[in-house]
Image (cartoon, rainbow, N blue to C red):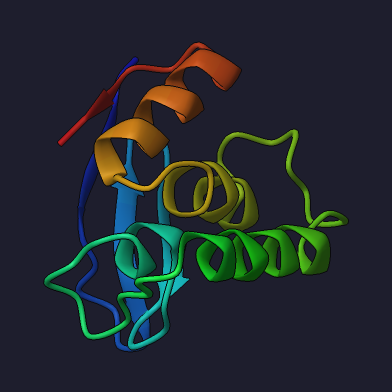
Amino acid sequence: MPLKLRKSYRDGKKWVAKDENRTIHFGQEGARDFTLISKPSSKFYLTDIAEREKVKKAYRARHANDNLNNPFSPGALSYYILWSAPTMRGGIKNYEKRFDIKVII
């Protein structure tokens, strides 16, 4: 069963992932993530690649104890989709590979 990914309609959240059984909002609205700090058109863009990696490493260390084995936890969705690759498409591919779940944008 595919997971549909859309912009969140909930205040304070960036994204919503839905399947036939659940709705999961994730990502803090207004906060940076690896996909944004790697995107030149983003207000969060960091030109220094080493600095980007430092920010990513700090996020991943802070969230290492989140429920990252549950593909439907907000922590796992953020960790893999927003913080594992410099693009959303890359993060989605990492999430799909990790959990064997198809994501539809």
